[in-house]
Length: 548
Image (tube, rainbow, N blue to C red):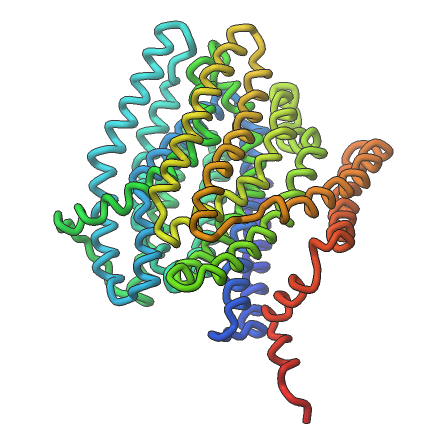
């Protein structure tokens, strides 16, 4: 135990040193320029991405300990509870009000205090009248399915975890509302720094829980404690930066907000159904090994979460700009959209290729002595990685449509896509499990996730064309796709010729180099990208100055 505490203290100390050094360099080197849009967007996205990547690093260490320490079935039960509360119920009670608050305050800063009170009040109402009954209903449904013999009922620990995690929704609602204010002010780095502090607190809390042997119930209470501390930090920041928080339950204003926010909530909720509702289907029809199957399917998503930190950082940074340009010429909005898609695809393809080729090594790294129990996760990760490119693109296009106030079009697209996802999974997963092929069920669910992203894009595209914002993705993706194949051509021989972790490490080193060279030779990285980089660092302005 002492050795573990020493290790934890060392990791936290190192993390704080890195953060302090980075903050010092940022204060010394970065100079804001209100006229330089490229630099401002880079600041908002790069700082947010860097800090959130640091958070993912801490989460990755915890994941290593959880997967290697806890029984997979117990961990699967906890992940089911966490997904229900932290994704589904949190998304429903958030109700799209964060994006709505960001959009309205970015356009009309004088309404910030009034909109904050109304949106926060509505969130609290939804927690009381919707989240608690839905949680009870889900527990009752799973227990009924268990009595019918289709699956095992929720364990007592799984049920307790659901009720405990529900407590995180209240402080989480407040923290989300303050975050929306910072996003509207284009100060995304502040919530990102708080996210890092929260991650450090969560890191300590979860390590302590594991060390004391409190299991999944301890993990749930740790989440409650950390979310409350985070809310207190945001409270102090809000008073210092914006205004004293207020609550408002004005029925007239709420009735006006609900029709505007409802499509946003449905979009967010349906996007979760796109690639996570299959987990609930696996849990419902998994038989006596339901919780184990859940964990085998969850692990690839947890590994992909490291890559999924990027799209929100970029889209949230660009969104205020998109919202302002939506009322002007479509050509400016279309240009910003295309440049952002290009950047996202340049990053998504090498990530997908690397995760495919290193799937076996990644799963082994986390599972270690339990690797045999997680063997189905290898093929799931190798396939699921290829939902990243279209997922990155669809995430941005969703915010473009929000910026031009076409939320209903997004809702229609998500309804169709989610219906496809649900029907396909309901047809495939129970059938494969009944035939005694649970691993095939997990693999099929991964393929359906990729197809669902294709369906979503196919529905988004004509709507954007009507608005003069055709994404022209076919023109943007072929170069990164071929460059990723060049990357694979270099990595595969390295993995074959060099044994074990040595081959994986060397492949990780030479792969990105090969990708960068291939992208440059194919023209994916050209004069326009270099010009954008010069604008970010301010080189273009210096060149424009006359010489003495």
